[in-house]
Every structure is written in structure tokens, then in C-alpha cells.
Amino acid sequence: MKAAVFTGPRGKIEFSDVPMPMIGESDALIRITACGVCRSDWHIWNGDWEWVFADPSRPMILGHEAGGVVTAIGKGVTSVAVGDRVTTPFGHACGRCGQCLRGHQNRCERMFFPSIQESGGWAEYMVVRDADLNAIRLPDNVDDLAAAALGCRYMTAFQAVRDRGALKGGETIAVVGCGAVGLAAIEVASALGGRVIAIDIDDSRLERAKELGAFAIVNSRATSPFDTGAAIKAHTRDHQGAEICVDAVGGAVTFQSAFYGLQKGGRLVAIGMTGKEDNGVIPLPIDICVMNELSVCGCSGIPVHGYDELLALVAGGKLHPAALVSRTIKLSEVEQALHDIETFNATGYIVINDMTC
Ligand SMILES: [Zn+2]
Ligand SMILES: [Zn+2]
Image (tube, rainbow, N blue to C red; front, top):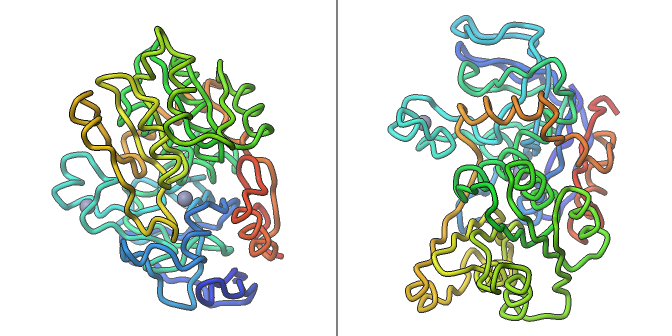
């Protein structure tokens, strides 16, 4: 099969022929119809994240936002059949550990990561481990591009707003960073009745945020995190700050901007992960956190049961992940896409939808 192969940090992504992957008894093989190019792929390609032990062996097929069609199943698989259209989360849960049994499959203690531990979705085919749990069947009217978007960024944004941020209708939520995951958070928050403030350094991304429902925008290019926080507060009731702020980038500037935009008792949800400038550590103004009773939490993926509500909203036309796809490319063009992500030269999602060339 054709695949785009990672050869090492900042090395060439080689478009080449590789052997077909093998499946075990509980697995499914899917033919990829679309796979996203995520900032996390860029982080891995850039050689980041050794501080969280996400250091794949090489050569490795990256890509973790895959949608596709089931072409083979192991003899123990009962919930999907050959021909089913599926999406799959970026990490495959085991279904048997303590976290999985408590319903937190996105916190699985034995999480299996395609593109880190084994081949991911930048290929014609990939394996979905424990397919009864990790192959999520799609409603007919959820298309292939949406299936790819639902594998990582969009579903994480949904979980961040709906569950970790616990947004209630009428609350104000500030989303710092209007890249692909930030725009998804803005669309989700608007659909769930939030009053959304969008923050970015790029006016075109802020315009897109407005189209997706943001009632106020802040260009933070020339302001300190503290002043960006003040600009967020200026759009809130009595300038008290937002109930929820989301760091949708991952870095000291965006995290602290979100932090300073919170009202007393506010909740900060961090989605993005850091790069080499921060090496996984961001200073937190802890005294303000204590005095103002702030909550800071992270968000990574969604538990499997969370897909029910998310897919219902997509199938019902309330959410439109495919509309955030700004560019579709061929598999052989993925290396250029990584460079575009590095320079933030992309608004919305880049998705590979031709795996053969
Ligand atoms: Zn991702
Ligand atoms: Zn588990």
C-alpha cells in the first residue's frame, strides 16, 4: 500500500510502498478515505514531546485523524462489519483498565497510539485496535471529511467545551487561538448557547471565528498576556471576565492570556500542547489562582460514549466539522502541509483525501 513515512525529526516524509498492516482477533482494518494533518503531527515531526514520552520509532507512518471504510475484521469483532464507514479516536483505548471501566476511555492507562506505537493514518490502510470500542460507526450523512476531523481536534474541542469546561447556555467563553481546534471550540460553544469571544493574532482567522458565532474578537498580536486578559474582560458583564477560557494553542502566551481573562471562580481548559519554547512547562500565576478560586484543567480526546451526542449534533446539522476543512490534499503533498502548519499558513483543517498519489 502507499504511505507517507516519517523518517526522523524534521526529516523527509517519504511517499512510498509499504507492506499491508496485519490485524489481530479484536481489530479492524480500514481503508482510509480521509485523514487530517494535525498540529500534533507537526509536533512529532518537529521532534517535540520527548518530555511526555511521545517519541515514535522510525520509520513511522504518522496521522491520527482518520476516517475510513472497514475492509476486514478479526474473528472476535462484533460491533462493526466489513463495509461500515467509521471514524476512530487518535488513541485506541483498551476497554479493560480502571479508567476505561469508569467510562474514561480517553484516559486509558494502556492507550495505544497510532502514529507513535504503530502505523497511523497517512496511508491507504490502518489498523483500529479493539475495534468494538475504537471503531465508531458514522451516520450516513456524516461525510468522509467530517470523519477525519472527528478523530482528534474537533472531538477534543467538543469535550473541552461540553465536558471539561462544562459550558452552560448564556455563559461567556473566550477561546484563545483560532487555529483548527480553536475554531472547532468556537463553533461548538456557539451551538451550545455560549457567548463566545475569539482571540488570535491573525485578522482573517478572527473573521472566520465571527462567521462561526463569536460575538466579539480580540487581536492580541501587540499585547501582553495580561493585557489580552483585560481585553477579554472588556467584553464581559461588568468587566468581570469570562466563566470559561480555552487555551487552544498550547504555550505560555496563550495559556496566560486565557488565565488573565477569567472571572472569579472561572475555569481554564487547556487543549493545546506545548512545543520547544516551553518544553511542557508554563508558569502559572498561582496566587491569583488561589485568591480567585480558579480551576485549571486539561482536555485530551473524548470518551467513546461522548461520540453519541457529538455525532447526533453533526448528523442533525447543528455542527459542521467538514465546513472547517479549508484544504484537501494528496497523500504525497503532506510534507508541504507540515511546513504550512509550522508557519500558521493555514486556516482550518488540512485533510488528505487521496491516499493513492
Ligand atoms: Zn491531533
Ligand atoms: Zn483502558
